[in-house]
Image (cartoon, rainbow, N blue to C red; front, side, top):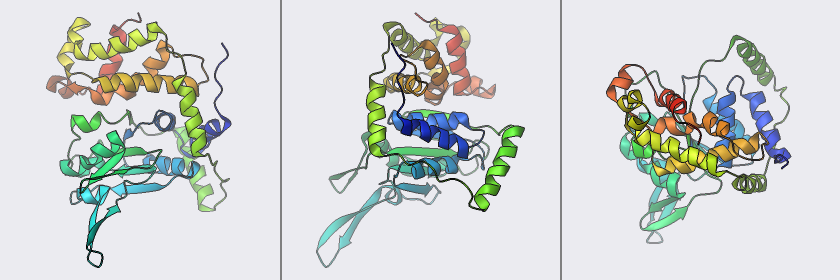
Amino acid sequence: MEPKQRPNAIAQLTDALNARIIGQDQLVESLVIALLADGHLLVEGAPGLAKTTAIKALADSIRAEFRRLQFTPDLLPGDVTGSDIYRPEEHRFEFQPGPVFANLVLADEINRAPAKVQSALLEAMSERQVSSGGTTHPLPSPFLVMATQNPVEHEGTYPLPEAQLDRFLMKVSLDYPSLDDEFRILALARQEQVDSLAPGVQITLEDILVARQQIHKVPVSDVVETYIVHLINATRRPSDYAQALAEAIDFGASPRATIALDRCARALAWLHQDSYVTPEHVQRIAPRVLGHRLVLSLSAQAQGYDGAAIVHELLDHVPVA
């Protein structure tokens, strides 16, 4: 079977994002996968690592409406979803859409808002709709939330609850760029200051829909499907695989994680122009899909482990069927 070819538009989108987002290849790959797999992305990293630049560049490239939400402790749920406004001259309430009514939404520093504001995103992220005053308002399509949080500063923050974390298709943790990439970033910044950058690519919603249809058709063998299910099962019954894992994991991944891992592995295979999903695709994407869905024990957290590190341990203990 010949490898599936990516539409030129998606290939150009990936190349354009990599040209503008230097040294964050995994972020770019995850953004494109989230867009194609119709999911949301949680990005963790220190300030200045191109989190905002990445989502803006994506919005500029697909002719989509972009909104940025700066989460603060005094933010209200209605500031996110919108609210009903009374029109006295007409003696009726009218729904005023909030900033969540956009194709691409940047929820900046999402963990700085209290739980009631974070939960305002739950229905939007899961059901792609907002309910207000007994009326349901559908969100535009495509709809992608990219939320950011700072892993260093915890004062005045509210950890995301497990139900909220489970709504994110993937989580990406960013690191500082290499020395070579730092020189490239400096050169790129100078070009932007003199407005000498070439215009970016522009893709349409039709390009995205075509890509999603092709991704859905990427074959997944029984062996790979069994491997995916066993990986999820290992997060729930880690003692069947290794005692160290059992001591590190308090709660495993939900069935939503199984679906997400399958979708992301298909999207990754398609992006690499492979004809079918292999265990290597699953292994590459699994830390990003499963890491944030695990509830780690206090002892594991005290030893400095995070979810992605535990998933890497799982991959070493769960054999390919």
